[in-house]
Structures are given as structure tokens and as C-alpha cells.
Length: 344
Image (cartoon, rainbow, N blue to C red; front, side, top):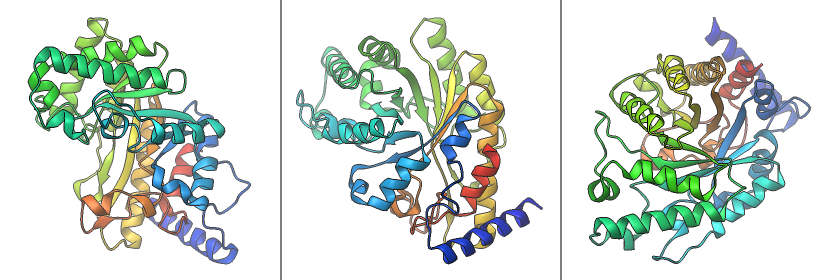
């Protein structure tokens, strides 16, 4: 019944778009996703990236439909410290200015990650003392630069393997697991008001990887380490099944005294997209939104950019895509209307 209803909603939306020529929203006077989320005390956000900001229709919708923005790449290490000790915050600053002009929150992404590191960091061996000093300087320089402008930081991103063992990153191999607590402490020193998160993918269900984060979070909280939240990226794929234990998983982290957030949401599919797949995708977007709303400390949802036009999926998963609530022409898909239904 739900799928049939969504197909009808999606069809009516497509007809309305065709008649009105309005790609972004069926009715400009209706409340936005952000408006609806705020009624529940949540935010609803989107990632974005600097090259996209020359697209004025895209930028207009980014500024009107969402109340939170995450820079997709502009705050990562390769962009912010391309040479050792030489910092460049131009890309991050552009997105922060855009967000502040639109009264939108910014999630900083990301301070410590094994990927997209500059060559000067990965092309040599470091002693423990050397790398510790490099890591501390990078974290504190960046966090201080954005002090008071960033609502929350993904401090450490993707620290575990699928089986719950630590990922063998340059930081783990040289500094041991304690680098995570140190990173959180250093970020907190640089901006005591920012909310500090651990963030990862494939942690939506209760299983080895999310269990590892649960144990780590419990240990860090017991040690008094400033950890405030856990980010579940929620890069989902129709062919792998919906994470049915998502709500229970969010709830157990909340019981530790942590906020949670769905931080990088998209729902990809094997192409071509069909009416059936788009209806299933819409169900998933509704269900994950309802899971967040059911847990008081799930503070918000961020889609990993809002339109298929700028999705990262096709480049990384050939033959897959159509993962977001708006299509490549900035027209709302059934997923968009499912989100609205869930937030109402």
C-alpha cells in the first residue's frame, strides 16, 4: 500500500513539475525540509562542494531547503594543509560564508581521516613524537580557525574495519589507538563549544563495526574524553537491504549520553532507475527519517548532497546511482515527498 501511495505521489509531482516548470519544489509556499525538521527539534542538511557553487539554481535550493551544510571536501587535510605547516582555508571559508549568510549550521568534515591526505604526510616515515606533533598542530590550527563558526566536527572518520578491528592508518600504526582520544581532546581545547563526533559508514546496523564504536565510546566517556556524538554516514544501497536495527542502534548510543546524527545519507541503486526502485528508495528515506525522529538524541539528518547531478556515487560505484531526493535536473523524486511525509 505504501509503495502504491508513493508511486501516486511521485507521479503527481512529476506532472506538476511538467506543468509549472518548477524543478525544485512542487509548491514554493510550502514549508521546507528544514522547516519540518525544526518542528521536531532537528536539522535537515546537505553536503556541498565548492565547484558546485557557481550553479545558481542549485545554490538557491541549497540555501532555501536546508538549515545545515557539510563541506564535502574543502575542510579535509589535503585541502587545508597542502604543505606541512602551510594552511589554506579558502575552500572551507567559502562554504562557511555561504552558510552563515543563510543562517545555516556547519558540520566540519573531517579532521582525522586515512584518505585524501597530502603527499608530504603519507610519503615518509614518522616517529611517534613527530606525528603526534603534526596531528595536534593540524587539528588545533583548523579548529581554532573556525572557532565559533562550526556547530560540530567529525573529528575522527572511519577508524574501524568491518570486523571491528582498528583500521591500519598512518595514525594508528604510528600512534596506536590513543590517537582518537588525543584528537578529541585537542579539538576540544581549540573550540570548547563545538560538538565532537566519531563518524563512519556501515555502522547503521548493530554488528561488529558499530559494536566496536559502542565499546570505544563507552571507554572514552568513562575516561572523561570530550566525545559528544556518533555519526552514522548511512550510505545505503537497495541491493544490500535496509538496516532494520537502525533505531535500536541509535538508541543505545543515546543511552551512553551521546548525540547521534545521520551524516552522509544517500540510497543508491543499480541503474537504470525504475518506478519500483524509486518507490523502494522513498520507503527507505522515510524509514531512516522516522528512526531518527524516534530517538530524542538523534539531532539531525544530512544528505550527501541533495541532487543526483552532483552525487559521488557514479564515479565510485560504476553502474549505480540515482541516490538522492532530487534528480539531475533538480526535480524532486518520490524520496523527497517521502521525507516530507516522515517529517510531518
